[in-house]
Length: 401
Image (cartoon, rainbow, N blue to C red; front, side, top):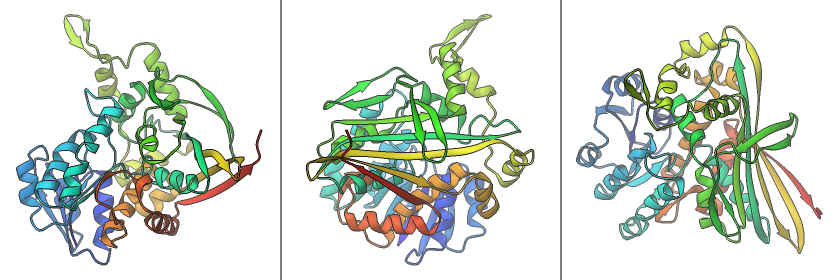
């Protein structure tokens, strides 16, 4: 199988590296506008060829993808539609990691824009698997697997808390610009059959996470809230809440107006506050020497939890299924792989979805997210995830009142 990976950033590098060692993969094209980034990766991998490409130019993508079976989009979501069109023109399957954020669109529109290409992919006998990181992605597989254990699934809550603070101050362990713009956007909650826009950082909730204790989390925009009601029957409620020091920092910035996107006049200059904040915000460490430097002074705190709570009815009785996703921490990820925990979990999760194409576990065409995968594909995914340390603990409570 010949695979093109568009994007030679952290996630793209991890996907390419794993594909290089995967049986059934004959050739990998690492494509990026930054040719040096792609070339640096390709030099040490025998199946990989580096090419320079302008991913906003559909013709260029089609040209460098000749003979490829799959196009993996490891670029920001605003490239999605153009690369999906390139996949159709080049007769390739398609995969991306997220639907949003895309400037000018809310998350419902981002998802629907992709789903509008469903019939074109079906007519071409092709699959476009969207939203394949860890959240959305692995979270989606876990949620659907739990939902299928119920006679009727009514509620899904994705509850995430992350507190990884080193003494060398790192406010965000992924792109600060992406993080802040995500957090400043109005989150979506699905309730009573409708999508509702909420205020950023709204509806705070204290959750008693297993092994960690009570932690405060707030509404946060995410693709699962949009896609789950479309692909999991019977749902009445879906929400995602997120918390931790990075969220608390963003909430303070938001409340004093520093995450506003509307320009303000300062000494005769027009400047959007959020652009200024993103410009001065310390960047996330990505290269091994940067991660080592962050770790060198030790930790303030290192804890986190990712809980998928699925509620509904089984044999006429109410049932709650709590699923905790476990993964290696920052120090372990750096020592074993040279990546941060954020990069590891997202990149490895994405690779495992790519592997589903390689081992031919996907038997549907069209455009859909991971929760629409068949049972066999989901079971294979979770087995493979467990082998690299991404495991799931399940707690079932029945007959609740």
